[in-house]
Image (cartoon, rainbow over all chains, first blue to last red; front, side, top):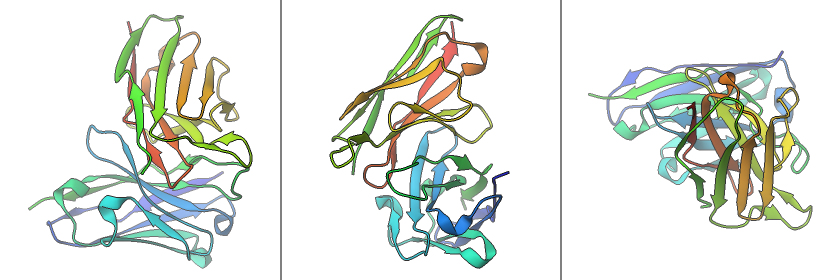
Length: 122
Length: 112
């Protein structure tokens, strides 16, 4: 059974930093791109970032470029999101989601974790 | 960035009736080399993470009831629920994966 379990969410002050983790199991983690998606309270979904199987190709939504860093450790089946210079507008539930394995074959974010809440407030 | 715009923002449909949600992308998400539309639909129920319903604009995921169907190509797409059931009450999102990923703003489906 595919499982994605996020952790690391917390209350943090504006300008602060936080590192989110996502523990993956039940599938060949090293074969998949992985994504982070966030959802502000009562709002819609916003894709944040993704990276390729080896961690060398990374893409970000404009609003987090230069502040957030996505990374992975395939030996630990784990995905991370380092968030720096946090702002109130970064307040959201952050979801880890499994992305594609082979481009053009099977795509879409087909498994999601339950999310971890990040609150940026003084 | 590719902007995804859904309509309507919300709709109320009677049980057993058809629900139709539109999604428009700011540029084509049809990849010419494989003739595939890089468009997915998700369902999100309250307190739950999203669930992938449809990929490639019209391919249902395993286990998704056949009352859900997707259509469209290029920049204009539709998600149709042919006979609304109580368990279909949710927010539905389209998403393009042609260039990075972008979601639509969501459409809330309720029972009339």
